[in-house]
Amino acid sequence: REGRFVTSAVNGLIGDRLLRERPQLAIPMAVRRDGRDVEPDADGLAAAFPGATGRLVVFLHGLCENESYWTRHRDRTGTTYGEALAARGWTPVFLRANTGLGLRENGVALASLMQRVVDAWPTEVTRVALVGHSLGGLVVRAAGAVAADPTPTDWNRLVSDVVTLGTPHLGAPIAWGIGHGSRGLSVLPETAAFGRILDWRSVGVHDLVAGLAEDVPPLPHARYRLVAATLTASQRHPVGHVVGDLLVRPRSAYGRDRRGRELFPGAEVLHVGRTDHFGLLNHPEVHRAMERWLA
Image 1: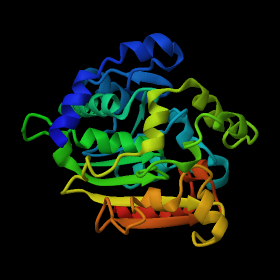
Image 2: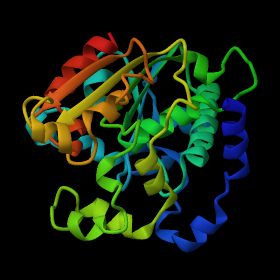
Image 3: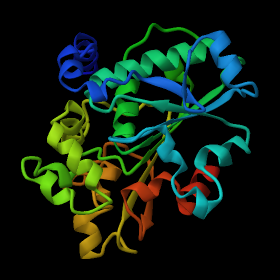
C-alpha cells in the first residue's frame, strides 16, 4: 500500500491543472524566515539560522493558513511555540505550503524539502520533531510515507516526535456538506475563510474531508502526540462531541474510529477544552505539553 501511495504521489506531483485553475493557491513549499523564502542550501540556511542547533522542530500550517498563523494570540500568551522551544535548545523551522494541492503532492514536496534541509543544515541534525496544525498534520503523515534512498542522513529516520493539532485524521465532518457548507460557514468569522475555500473545490479541501486512514501508517520509531479541542470544557459534552472545535471532532483528531480501532496505537492524546480550531495554534495547555514532550 505504501508503494501505491508513493507512486501516486510522484505521478501527481506537478498538479498543472490545479495550478492553472487556482493561481492564487500556486505557492511552492518553502522554509520561511522573516517573511521570505529561505533557499534550502548551505549558504541560505546558514544565513537564515546563524544559531542553528542539531534539534529541529518543524511547523506546518493548515488549510487557508500560512506560517504567520503560529503567532496568533501571542498578545495573550506572551510567546509562541517556536520561541518557547528555541529557549530549550530547539531550532524552530516554519514552512509555507500550497494547501490547495493534494496530500500526496504535498507529502512528496515536504519529504524532498526536508531532505535538502537536513543535508545542508549548518550543523549535524540529531533530532527532528514535526508539528502540524489541521491539514498540516495530514501532510506530515503523507511525507513520512514517501520512500527515500536509505542513507545515514535520511530525514525520516531522524524524526523522534510528531505532534498534530486538530488534525482530521479521519476527516472533518463540517466539510462533508461541501455542496452547501460555504454559505453557512461564511456567517461565522471563525469559519469564514473555510467557507471561501470550500467554494474553490481545491484538492486540499477534499483531502480535508476524507482524512488519511490506515494506508499511511505512522513512523514506527516516532512518538505521536495527538491534540484535540472542543468548544466545551468536556469532550463528552453533547455539543463538544458533535461540533468538536468547530471543524474537527475529537475522535478524528485522535485517529479513533467508531469501532474502536486506532491509527496510532500507544499515542499520547491531549484534550484542550473551551477553545476552537485556531486556538490550538498558540495555547497555554499545548505549550506545557510540548515542553514535556520535547524535553
